[in-house]
Image (cartoon, rainbow, N blue to C red; front, side):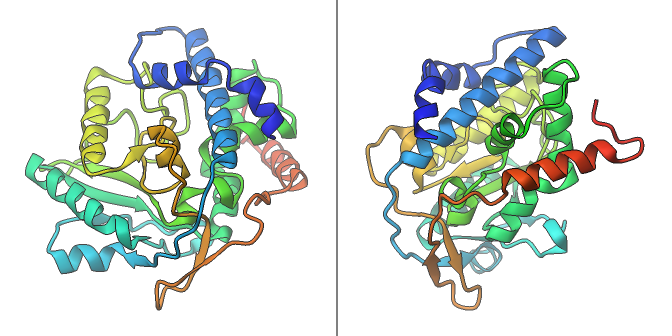
Amino acid sequence: MLRAARALTDGYSAVIMSGMERVPRPDDEARRCYWGEQMDAAYAFMLQILAYPVHECGEPLVSLRDASASAGVDMRFSEEPHVLGLPRLFYLREGLIPRFLASAREMSRRGWILKVEDGFRTRLMQKHLALRPEVFSVVLRTVMWERGGAVPDVEFLSHRLAAVVASCPRVGTHMSGSAIDISVIAADGCEVERGGPYLTMSEVTPMGSPFVSEEAHANRMEITSLMARQGFSTYPFEFWHYNGGDAFHEHLRASGTTARYGAVDFDPATGRVIPIANPEEPLNSALEIQARIEEVLAEPGRHPA
């Protein structure tokens, strides 16, 4: 994988920067081109994260619900079940809690309410998130659109999936307890416009997509600036994902600092974390990806083309 990264990362920084700047590209061909460029850059980013140094600090995980309630901070949490009907695990590393609460307070002063869509994910959650229809089928359909209707091979689709759902614990910062996915609610109770709801999977997903309205782009930038003031970095290829203290965060800042949060299992009763052995091991095999492609294509009336 690291050898492949050298071929992919030429011009990587430029693509990252263009992904944060809104450049008008109006037609369908431009949409396909942009999607492909961004997904290639996202996969290259993941390969670089795979190589980034991490020294797990052992810091416990803390309940975001409990922390916000104790601090008297108004906040919302997704009521949707996670994959397989599992409850969402709204936990974050202890050292990130003050930043998280400060972000929510600043949003409150702005007249917004922070809504947490997702926090910590177990390996089971991360594995099946990539396979759930709302993700897998949509990414497959989008890749077929990108390729003029051609069904992608397993390797190509796996690269595209890895850009939006981490394919192994080593690069899955939700599994590090150092990432949150958020939406933002306005004073009227409606979601702040960002170009689509949480988990939108299309050419509008990258933070700097030129295919969203001026209002949506401005809101994305304002939210990202607010989160940055409190010490969070944004994953450039998803407009809802923010990190702190992990490989994403240190790499995006070009800090040269070893990341302190790595992939862990944890005990919700105590918050205690245990580093995951062999975190580079893929969560879904090529055979599982191939089988899911075949299942989706075989669904009556659900052909993704």
